Amino acid sequence: MKQAGSQAKAQSVDLLPAVNADADAAKQSTDVQTLIGRGVKGLIVVPVDSKAIVPAIKQANAKNIPVVTVDLGADSGKIAMIVRADNVYMGTAGCEYMGKQAAGKGTVLNLQGDLATQNGQDRSKGFTECMSSKFPGITVVSKPMKWAPEECATQAQTVLSTQKIDGIFEGSESVCLASVQKVLTTQKKDAKVGESGHITVVGIDGSPAGLDAIRAGQMDAIISQPLDLYAKYGIQYVKDAMAGKTFTAGKTDHDSTIVQNGESLEDQRPRRPSPRRTWTTTPCGATGPDPQAHGRRGGPGRPRAHRTSTEEQQMTEAIVVDDVSKSFGPTRALADVSLSIAQGESRALIGKNGAGKSTLMSILTGLVAPDSGSVRVLGATGAATSPRSAASTSAARWCRRPAPRRTSR
Image (cartoon, rainbow, N blue to C red; front, side, top):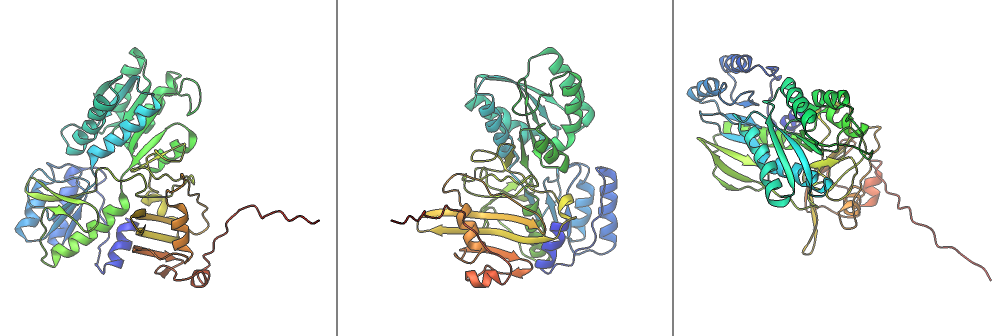
């Protein structure tokens, strides 16, 4: 919510305090109806259930109140825009990481979300279709966990007790992590990353507990939800809709595609970004240039993870980079880079040569100007125009290279 609040302020939108349904679909419908009664001009909703939210959406439609939903749409009713990540791609990213770790062989457990929901279907589809086409030597055992921790435990207990499993894909790490880890511990199959007998575990979401599990070596990779983009474009679309703007399917000006989704339109983040596309920092200090996931062993080919809003609420941002891009002739060095670093934090930027590390540092310290996007250092908005102006905001750069040895004769 902090990110939504920051975006609302930046875009001059008066945002009321959020209401929390606490995963209760009936309460969420009541909350929306209460807000409609208070005379709100627009609504941003993260649906608990795409079917249960329909009456509330239709009530807003009847009052001509534009509705923007995030992460999930509704079975019917008019939504001005659904802001949603490509869940098929997130499943595919998990498959690619898992398949490489398993060297293309073995058996993996796919803990599917609720297959009655679009996200549950899409994540499982991305994972299983990728495994079938790219890693045919891997057997996939798919079991529905229906977004319920107890189902994660039941399915994991049954499968791990009867089969040799080399990897586990959690359709939602925030749902399955604790219960699956307990099963692994009980069955003495909880060897950590790098240890003999380790079972590769990959999940989707990026919760604080998930990032802790990455640090502890209990999980190998997490494919994150793009919380920063949900906030930015959720606010932007509701603002535009309240102003009477309408939207059409097709390419957007922010590197995504609007597609038809039932009665509504959906702004879907790109399916397959370039390996250089986006960098983001994580609380454990590692970064990766891969498409949307963060692996415990950093570097190329690892998925990325976002710091979560819960952690960000406890910190003050010192450096904020928002959708920065930079090209040198035909070479795209940075594309839509976003990150934030809190005061007092240390972060490492890790990647192979040509991944864009030096270019980003040069932008922060005024040596290079970005082609697009924004930079804020200690509250000062705008990229530095020179090393001197960067130094005025306490931004500096040290290049640690061995000094040439002098010899005398």
